Structures are given as structure tokens and as C-alpha cells.
Length: 184
Image (cartoon, rainbow, N blue to C red; front, side):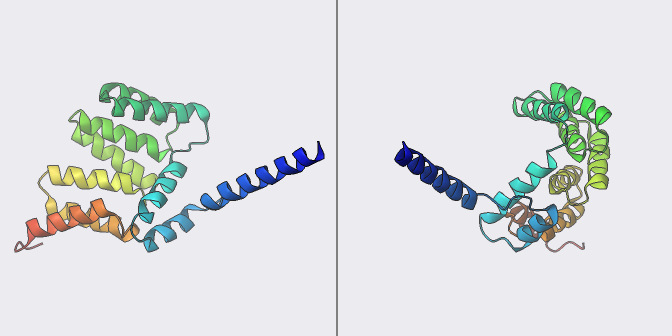
């Protein structure tokens, strides 16, 4: 019995060490993650971005987190009207939760409601000035409105936060080519 217990303890210890070393440091602050993001190279930026978003998506309330998840699921399933209902309820119950506004902005945008989408993106950025998802939304809307120079400025701001973002670098490069020869 003693050998089985010792063997089990060794297996558990090995598992804990293996998993522990493969996970990011517990309790990493957003500031630390943004510092890592600014210095990231290659694919590491995507991993850090997901960690940041994971922190942003935690409202502190299981009920609010459920509303957020349902809204995101509705968007993923092509039902922006349903998502709008979930995100609007979340905004009503948690008016200081930037993710609620960002999600609702996406639903508004997909429904062709650009004014309300911009209003919600603005509020998301008031609550969380480094919200690169909301910034990206502003950039996309600015492009749709025929304001490529303004969109480029937004994409450059995102690249200042996350220089390794391949998508934002491609968007910035595309707009720079488009604007080449035009006075900015």
C-alpha cells in the first residue's frame, strides 16, 4: 500500500509540475500581459491576446458571464438579433462591463445599425481604453464609412499595443497602399 501511495504522489507531483510550467504565471496582471504583448514575437502575441481577452470576459458574476457567453454564441450562430437582446440585458445589469458594450456593438454592426454600434464602441473604450477589439471595430466601421486614413490611425494604435498582430499589420499595410500618393 505504501508503494502505491508513493507512486501516486510522484505521478500527481509530475502532473502538477508539467501543467504548471505549461500555463502562464497565475495572477499575471493586465499591465504585465500588455508589456508581454508589446514585446511578443511571432505566434506568442495571439496567445497573450487570448489571455487578455479571457480576463476582460470575466465580469465577476456567473450570471453576467452566462449572458456574455449566450450573446457570443448567438453571434457565432448568425443570430445578431438574439445576441443584441443578451448584450442589451448585460449592459442594463452591468453598465461598467466593457465586454457587454463591445458585444452589443458587434450585434448592432451586423444589423446595419452603425450609429448605435459606434456609440457602444465609444463606451467600451471609455471603460477600457486598451480594448483592441473595440478599437478594431472602430477601424472596420471607419473603413466602411470611406475614411481609410482614420481607420489606418486606429490600426496603428492597435499595433502600438500589439506589434506582432499579423491581421492589423496586413490591414495597415493595405490602407497605406490605398492611401499612397494621397495627402493624409
